[in-house]
Length: 338
Length: 184
Image (cartoon, rainbow over all chains, first blue to last red):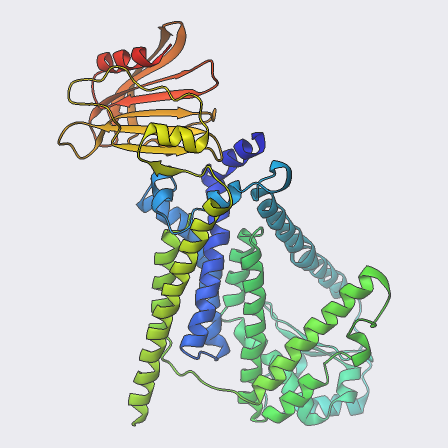
């Protein structure tokens, strides 16, 4: 009984209700947004991003807004008439009287840990690495053939060749720094492995990322997602939003080069080797399994991108009404979920 | 069909489909809200009588007033009771021909604030005093309720471990008589 009391102290407090309802509201918003994609056959990535942004942003403000308008929302009488009263589910007693609320807390704690380990710490280490690498001397000696191939690939692309840094690395590496001084980093291994068309398509994709920083949707989405570091739905939705960003940049690359086939083939070359995927792949033990899952997941994402590049579609500019209707449904339904 | 008409048709189809999905979502949430009551007993719900609430929740003691001011009578116009997450019984009494509750009696096993169980809350406390009533330490507060009516509230703790709150939209004198009739 004491456990239920302590639970009640948490969930009847303002911040307890806030934490619970951000998760519930995000889950409902996520389902409705996915249904909107099906209902209106929405496929364009940047349109889908706008919808997914709702899932991350709305739960952050919905509870305070609802409580401001109706301060008594959340009391026993409102809960009697609500669509879903979460305290009923939380009060369900599992084994030895432990409430279901305990499972909820475990899920939130895991989400917070994943946020710190997989998102916050890598940013910190990456920033530290950038500071260190800025202090290291740059290797200026680049093979002339490699430099010529790169110059040819950059022809016609809206990017200054001097802002492309060649890394002396035999692996396939290509990434961009989208900060105040944008740069594209490309490895010698990649330049040698790709033909000019593939190289051009891959670089065009990175140019897409750099151009997209002028519309920092991802940055705002990440800030809101970070504020809900405990929210597993916000975590999943942010990752889906980031995947849409890759597709947006694929579209930009196709616009810049006019060669979707070259981009598909370039992305295909980044897929993991078959021996890195599957149950018998990689090292033994937990780290091997984790690595295998990561490779499988990465491969699935790349396969999805390759398929989509070949079937690009445009939803046109008629997403206003679907957006407004979805937003209205989310706001109205979530009001009655406490 | 012209392209514009095709687009309109697609948009309208999408709208109808989305509204149907929203309806399904509402139905699903309502079912999810009802499911815990199937699995376990004791969640907050309305009862027709105190006896029904006591039987359903296995409550031994529910203190009820023996005295009512003029215009307020037994039985309660509204009864809310629960066993989870803590035991609580709320009784509301209306005055004849009135819409709102005039007297609220709350019995709760939780030591925290029972504000979420109070349909009418005191918005401003103008005076408060602690004293002994029939040997029990009681807190008497006089002020204004949310509906801007003058009201008074008394709280105390019984030996059975329950915390009691009585709120009356009237003077404290009648409230003291009501509480006296409840305290053993």
